[in-house]
Length: 271
Image (cartoon, rainbow, N blue to C red; front, side, top):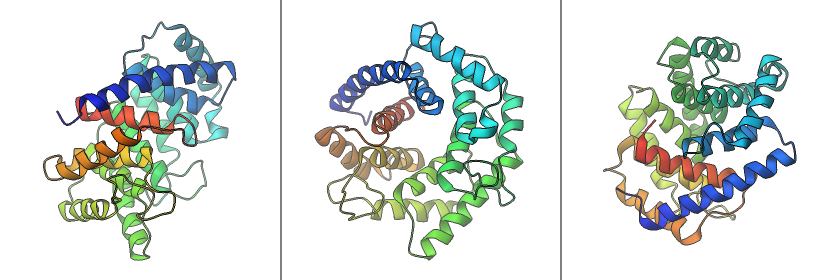
């Protein structure tokens, strides 16, 4: 097991904090996508479906989903609705695929809403949610994977590329067994080269802001899923950075906690 006792303690303490954040969000009547993502993380960590906060949130999400408010608010709302309701066994997979496909652009990627340009973070998030909901590889997903490869190559040719985008694509490749070993190898090397001297990751190496917990957790997970033995030293170096620095409030405040707990969940249980 790569996760040390320190990482496990951070995970345990983070869940307590996340539950507090969820209750505060409910009191403040905050936006559904953020609340659902926090709730899903807590449910996967053992929070029961009959917990008071889950019951209250379920009523609100069911109402929005039934009224199809996501059609006005974009795919972020759709994904949060279906991921949360799926865990509560309240939405069917066939309907999920049909509704998600409506947001796919001709190039294969997904934007934040219909008519928006395709974006790497949105596209890999779509694939991640679909996999978590048990959706197998299909033409829609294959098209998205091909777009992610082309878009990443376009970004890096221009001297661009951001660590969280690379991590997201590597995770997507793993989830749906994207068969392009050369491309995956290049991405792995790129992510290794982008690791900071302190062991963490930022959006790009040597940026003034320094290493960031959420980007570090994503990079660790991407390398672990791709080839945990090959990238073991880099993974352990990243985990050590998190253990030393801890998690702190990013924007939004729950971001680093969710990504760290999700990293722990996936390293322990897979998808």
